[in-house]
Structure formats: structure tokens, C-alpha cells
Image (cartoon, rainbow, N blue to C red; front, side, top):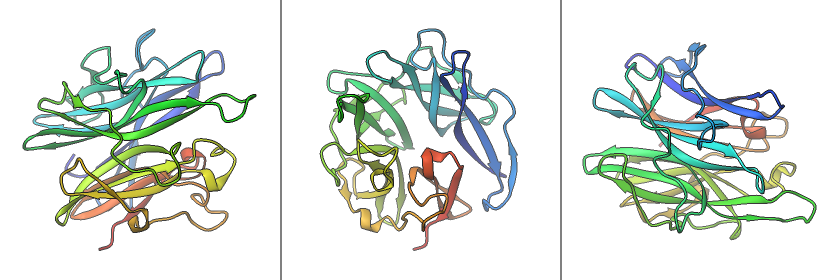
Length: 286
């Protein structure tokens, strides 16, 4: 929409048995990101059907202008028995400027494969003249760090290419080097071209202890590339870090998204407790 910035986010509610469901909503801001114009009060995208990959929730949605409509790549998830959840990437479209979305089909557009066994999620897509480029995450393992606790997941960032936005070519290879250790979790890549390079912001954390130990929680990471495939990681150049004690993002910064508005580059991100207290905004300063 030409007169505003629409920010999609995920909400949570409890179902009839007390477990969480995740829904998509949005908030509209003026182009300068200083005034809230409104928040959706309707169903933007209903949850998936019984037994489908997005039956229990929809997490991030990345929208892309595609000719006369808007397409979106969702992260749908469903509960499991041996582990907490699995996820796949869905494809949706909107013909009313992102007010509501419909599914292209009831199944995912990308899901588990031979080299990506579970947790295929967090798609970010750029549409270029040569096709569609996607950065996403895939799970590498579930691991028990303590005998009496539930297993935790490990996931990495990968790349895929498509000519039509539906059929994707992927290698299942990690493209962002680890910084913490081999069990580092990497999530929600966002990519943009600025200057003469491509830049990626993402978040990363320890696989265990992140729920209670602030030092193990999510931080914002950064990498750059000349070809969108091979990346050099340099978190010291991210230009953003957690705030001082007691602030809304003092313990955690996660789920970044970079976008341009009126010639300015902004980054949206969540703070403590995975966004329980909302999302924040920062502006890129050269």
C-alpha cells in the first residue's frame, strides 16, 4: 500500500485444552513509522485444516509484491508427540492489498526433505529479475541437554532458488557459519541490497538455557554477500545490541526484519521473552 507500512505479526491464544494457537495479524503505520494507523480486527489468514502442517499455528509471514497481487510465505506449525512441534513453509496470496490471504493449497510449498529432516521454516523471499531467492531455516537435530527435560531443537540458515516462486531448488546446506558452537540456533534471516552488496540480518542463540539465562538468549547477527549464496559473517558489524538492564530488549533481541520506506532503511525486531512486550524499531545510519 502506497500510503502506509503494514507490519504482520503473530499472536497467541489458548485453545479448549489450554494449548496455544498462533494467528496472523497486522498493524499499519505511517511511512515514517511514527504513527500507528490501525490494527487488524479480522481474520487475516485462518489456521490450517485438521491434520495439516499449519493446523495449530502460523508464525512469520513474508510478503512479496507479485504483479497485481501480494504473495506470502508462511511458517505453519503443528504439534508432535515425541517433540514439541514441526514446521513447514506455506504459500498464500492476497488480492485485496494484504487485508486477507488465501492458501494456494492445503499443503506446504517447502517441507522436510532427505537433508532437511524437520523444522523447515522462516522463509524470506526476494523477487529479482532472474527469479525468486529464498533464505530459510531447517532443523538439524533434536537434543536432550538434561535427562529429565524435554529435547531442544537446533536449526540453521539455508538458501533456495525458484523460477516461479513455487518449485524450489535447494541443497540443504548451512550457509551462515556458527559463532557460538555447533549447536547454535539461527533464525529468521532477512536480506536486502545496499551499496554494492547483499546484507543479511538474523538472530541466533544457544540451543539450551535460553528461556531462563539472558546470556544464552537471542541476539542479532549479521552477514554480507556478493552473490546471495556465499556469506561472510561479522556480528560486530550488526550495529545493534541489547539495551541496558530493565529495558524491554535488555535480555533478548530476535526475529529481525529489514525494510525500506521513503528512502530509509529500518529494522523491526522483538525483545525479551520472544516479543511478549511487543516489537521495536531501529533505523540504519550509514
